[in-house]
Amino acid sequence: MNVAARARSTCPLCSGSRHAPYVVVKGYAYHRCADCGFAFLDPMPSQIDLNAGYQGHKGIAADYYPHPSSRRRKAFFRALRLIRRIRGRSVIDLGCGGGFFVGAARLLGAATATGVDVDASTIAYARRAFPGCDFHCASLDSFVPATRYELVHCSEVIEHAPDPHVLMRLLLACCRPGGYVFVTTPDLGSRYVPARIEEWPGFAPPVHTGLFTEENLRALFDRYGFRPVLRLPPRKTGMKLLFRLESAS
Image (cartoon, rainbow, N blue to C red; front, top):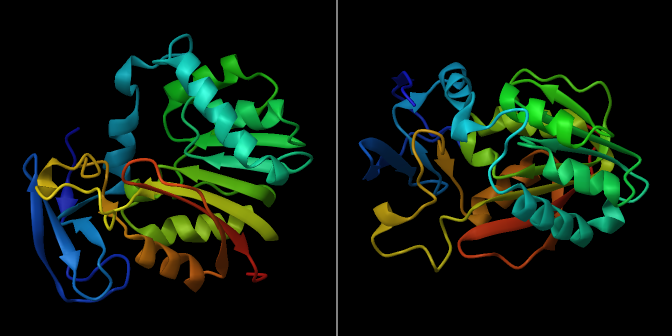
């Protein structure tokens, strides 16, 4: 992926100016904020260039998605963990890929199941594989939901957002007051992150534009009126958190 980038003067998470070089991975420089602990690419690629790079990756097409059986199985068991928030509810998956979680939610009794992804190939696959669901091809920085949902699923997406606040505003627009957001993302604060930090797969430039700790991720969601209600056991160096929207924003 060849992306243009621009240097930042402030942290994209907390707007602090006290950030410094942290690690270089595959020729891309990450800085880390001394105020909030967020690590981010500097220079930062634009959303437009990132979106272009996602198109047709991994050879995905309407009739092909890598390891579909494994993805279906994993999506089903994740949805099963969230079944209390799925059955009879409206569900949307932001960054849905091939639609596996959307399909699992529908199978487990979601009233409506919707997916959004910027990659036209993945959406073509999802529409063919899960015809009972609703899919939209759109960038998450421009998608405008027609309604609000009772469960928003957003897995391995927030680390791709050049501006995490843009994604948070979309989560607010998608989630009903009293509804839930389930988010997963790599955990920079995990004790399992290797001592040779540059070897950690969480750093995947240029698509992983920012890496969180659980502390600063919770603080970000709190700022937008989301309160944590469930923390699923992490797998390796990832976070799995369920938040409830308590404000009427």
